[in-house]
Image 1 (spheres, one colour):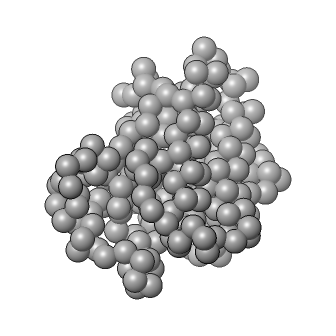
Image 2: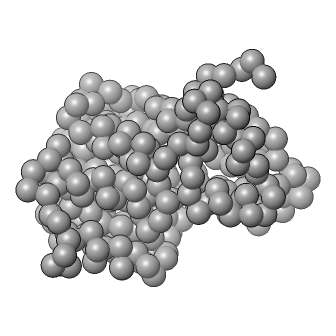
Length: 258
């Protein structure tokens, strides 16, 4: 453990272990920090080598190199949680990719990539986590959807379809597993200031100022605000909440005037 890391003595998630996919940057990293601040131990599944540095910095965190689109990698991450921390209480299927291009330009490979990561990867994470949680009679599974799984936008067909699937997946799994003690919810962020969004802006695919103007709150969402939502849903404070898609979008999806 990094000796400079501040390890929480207690918190809403003290003594629990969480698996996070795509935790090396952006929203995933913010969630990792928030979960650690509440006392959880972590396992990160990420193909990015810098996940090792993130794990060392956070403390009580193990990085597993792999892809959410490969079942063996997801299963290995779940098993690492059990081997290292003796439990798996929370799983956040956060890993995702963008697809922002005219629909007629979308190739078969483009379509398959976004479905493999955004939809199949989320399913594999939820299913493998549930295989460990259902026998123990408790657990929380969080799926990262998007406001574009709730409302539509042009030139994002693969992204919108995959995220809509994630939202429905959360509801379906919640209904199926509720009686066995496993809660499943989705988080639907709006435009969040991350390297993911900055890349789209740099390529001229989005206009950050127009996005701020379109958002009723007049600003982009901060990664910490999404992380706070994840901590809440993972905690006992949300013990009666399952099958819900929680929007964290500054009012975007609710606003239909202009």
